[in-house]
Length: 216
Length: 216
DNA sequence: CGCCGTGTTGACCAGTTTCAAGATTGGTGG
DNA sequence: CCACCAATCTTGAAACTGGTCAACACGGCG
Image (cartoon, rainbow over all chains, first blue to last red; front, side, top):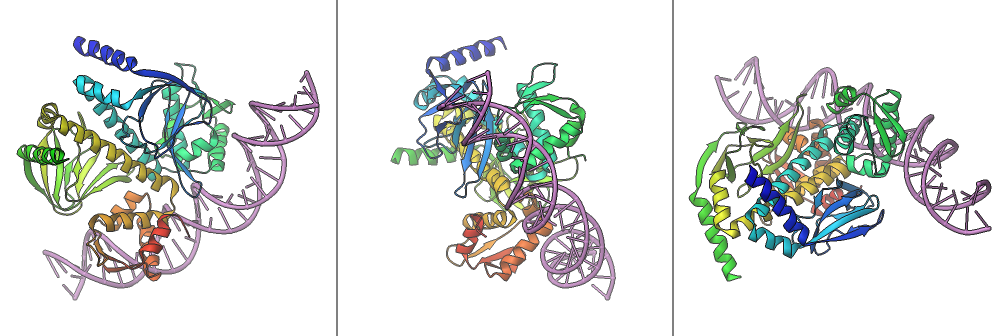
């Protein structure tokens, strides 16, 4: 156990060695789907979205990333999605060649990568269920709960919603108007409150949980 | 290049060494979500579905597997989904401990595992887009094209649809009646024909492709 | 032969989208 | 600092897709 902790620290340090900091401003593209994948990234601050753009203008957001999250570690050869900055962001980029070398040198890094990909697959399964089995209210309830867990401060029940309504809609497979309507209804029901477009307060997490579970 | 081919053969042989054949009959469970994950699998014959069952009886199918497909190589600790036999199937199971050992011994096996997980993530992204951006017709068109590519024989345009209408519905996030209706309409439009409930003929792949691309 | 599981079709309904019109916010230049 | 503009968000009404409920068809099997 102690050994593992030391190892984790060493892994992190080794990775830090090969990283380069960069800034990207709001709504700028970090890379496009199909670009040669030379780097992987970690979010230091801000929010990133990973998405695919359809020819007909529609868009599916596969994931939002927050400080501490890694991305593009599963793209070999070329990027399988587009990465864009939701807010101004600071990133660390890692040359994939060097990451691969780290994996060869340190078994623990390799293991960590496998675990990471495995977790990503689990998260995508949850997203599939959300899109395949949930109605609009349930999707939004699940999304808000997830957000409040990831970014919410301890006990004051406040949490940030850094992305636009359109981003939320494209993540949940809904239209922007539907997102607005459901949020308004949750506000009327006193389940949530919106201090600001991008700052929410969780008033009744039990009811929100019930909605996420598909109870009417 | 030649070295890589030799390597691939050796990897396959090494994996084969540690595999055990087993049979599972139609609609039987191979393992349940949450079960300790001691084995990974390859499909030898038949069709398998990976799914999650909700408390309210709904179900989301994340993937169908056909001969040659591997599954459960990303489940560490416990299975993240339930695996069931769509038809009678023959599987090969691999003890995860031994797979892990193979990965340590042979870098190429490890690399192969990473590539496999990466491809799985790409496939799940396509599934996300299907559920998030496509209407019923488009979902079914995409599904049929995928099936005909995977399992169709060369030029006769016939392909098997081994799963039930309910399975298709649960994979596509639709109801069984919607699946039936859309299939009937495609038949009326002479895009496909159904020789049997489980055997289809592709009559007009261009139109099917157009439907998959969301053109009305 | 009749039952049961599966598939198909119809009529109706609910939820979501679409289209359109305001309200609000944030940023820019005077 | 304010006025204005653009972008984003919100709300309403109507249209439509897909869901629900119900009946019926079909095929395999006891």
